[in-house]
Image (cartoon, rainbow, N blue to C red):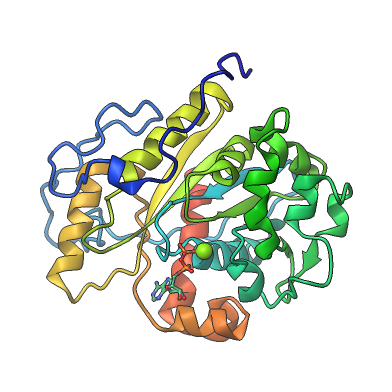
Length: 328
Ligand code: ADP
Ligand code: MG
C-alpha cells in the first residue's frame, strides 16, 4: 500500500469548477472502473398494468430483511458528496435509524466540523471527546467517544468545530489518510454497519472516510446542478480505490429531494439514471419539510412522523441496501 505516496492524492481539492458540468453533456463521467460504467439506462419499453417508479424501473417494495443471528464485522459506508445540502446528514440519521429498526447495530460517525449529525441526534458536542480527539490521538479509547442516541441500536461518534483544524494538523502525520480506518477497527466487530457522514469537501477528512469505507453512498439532490462536480467526486473515489483502498465500491446513488410534481425534477432524474444506470437506487427520497422538522427536533423522521411517507422512504433505502448486499 501507499506505493505512490509521493504523488498527492488530491489535486485541486474540492474545486468544483475543475470538473465538467456533466448535466447536459451526453455521456456523463465516462471511464469509471468502479462498476460505474455507463449502463443502459435508457427508457425500457413499458408494459401496461405495471407501475413504474421515479427511476423508470417497475415499482416494488423491498421486504424486511431476515434478522441477524450474530453481529459484526461492520460494513463501513461513507456518505459522500462535496456539494453541501444534498441530504448526506439527513440520510445518515434516517438510514441509520431504519437499519437499527431492522435489527442492525449501527454506528454513525459525524465527520463534518459543522456537527449537524451530532445536533440532529440531539447529542451534546462539547461535553466529551469527539472524533477530532480520536484522529489527533488525544483520546485513544474509541469507546469513550461513542454515545447512545434515543434510537435503540443507533450510536454516534460526535463532532464539533474542532474538527475543522484536523486537516491542517494531520498533514505531517505518517499514513494520514488511514487514521480513521485504524481508529474504527477497534469497534468494527460490535456493529453491523458504520455510516460516515462526510463534510462537503474532497479534502483529507473525506479521503480518510473513503479509505476507511467498504462502500460509498452518494446522495444527489434532484435539481439542475445535481451532477455538477460528480465527475470530480468519482475521480477521487477512484484514486482512493487505486492507491489506498482497493476494496472500495460504489454502493449506490440516492436521489433526494425529489418532487414528482415538477417536470424539472423528473428530467433531472432521467439524466441521473442515464448517467449511472442501475447504480441509482430504486428508492427515491421525496422533498418534504418533515425531514428538516425532524432534524430540528433531534430525532429521525420515523420517530417524528412515523406515519408519514417520509418515514417509510428511508426504511426502503435500508432494505434496498440489504437487498443489494451493501449491508448484512
Ligand atoms: P448535507 O448533509 O448534504 O449538507 P442535509 O442532510 O443537511 O445535507 O440537508 C440539507 C437541508 O435540506 C437540511 O435542512 C435538511 O433538513 C433538508 N433536507 C434534507 N433532505 C430533505 C428532503 N428529502 N426534503 C426536504 N428537505 C430535506
Ligand atoms: Mg451534512
